[in-house]
Length: 189
Image 1: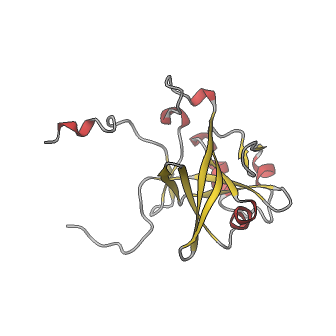
Image 2: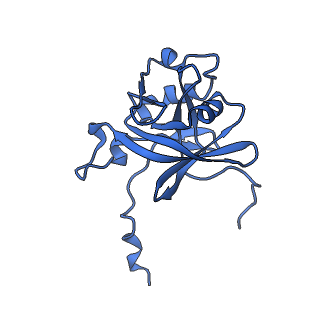
C-alpha cells in the first residue's frame, strides 16, 4: 500500500547545477539550483526556476542570459557552497578558487573547471508562484575533451554529475547503467 507524503517537490533524480550570471556591473556569479531540466528539443531549450529573492534572478532578468554549469562529483563541496551564500555579499569564485570564463556566445560566465556547460539565451519568463521559471534557448554546449565518448558527445560516466535528493537534502553520484534507451523495452508485448 502506498502512503501519501503530501504535495512535495520530490522528483528523482534532480541535477545539482550552478547557474552562471553577471550582475549589472559585470561581476560574475554562480548559484546552485536543482529546479532545472530540458523543456524543448526544437529549438533546444532548458529551464531553471529561481526565487525572486535570489541575486541570480535579477541578473538573468537584466542580462537575458545564463549558463548551466554541471559540476562533477569532484566539486561537490564547491557546488554546495555556491548554494549557501549570496553573490550579493560574497565573491564565490574567490572563496572557492574556481574560475569564471566569459562566454563568447551569451552574456553570462561559465565555470572553467566544470566538465559540461550549457550556454543559454533567455526566451521566456513565467511567474509560477514562489519561483519564476526562466526558459533559455541552448546556444551551445561545451564539454571538456576528457568527458567525450567516441561518438563525440559527453559520456555521463566521465562527466560524473552530482544528483540532489530533495526529500533527503543529500547529494548522490550516478549509478550503474541498466540498459539502452528505446531498446530494453522491445521485449514487452
